[in-house]
Image (cartoon, rainbow over all chains, first blue to last red; front, side, top):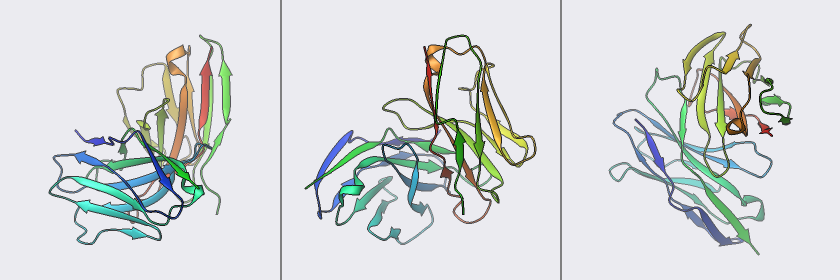
Length: 116
Length: 114
């Protein structure tokens, strides 16, 4: 079974600072994918970044980067130059190997608040 | 390029009533998923379709829940004899079979059972 653990229920960061949101995962699969989604108060889940288990480079998407440490089974999200609009709930999620239907297992989320 | 659309956005119902939600995925996406999210939790997988075939159902999906995707386009999720424990956000997502297979989510239907 797959499990995602997010140990930070809430985080505060000052505008323009960088922030790291933690995510650890547990799986016995060799092939898997890791995702981060942002959920603002409107409710929609917005895709941020993806890391495949065989990707050698850490994924980056604009101000988002994923610090992937496979041996430690961690996939932390780094947001650089935080903006007020980054205030939202952030979820780490895992996809199983191909053929498993691509359903995602989510963590409990981290509420990020960006302050002036 | 329209995203995933869900209707209604909010639904308030009395315990014991039936409710139906609709999801319109991104048009070229083959896969469609239903998730349920309760307060303070991440979304939990309920079921998914590939085209019109329902390929997997979670144990969370009791006999009172039924989902359909009759023509491989939009999908409906029906809950019969609603219970207060059914109160949650119901999220729909779709994906293609190509690339990262990332899921695109709708804004959800917030169900409140009184």
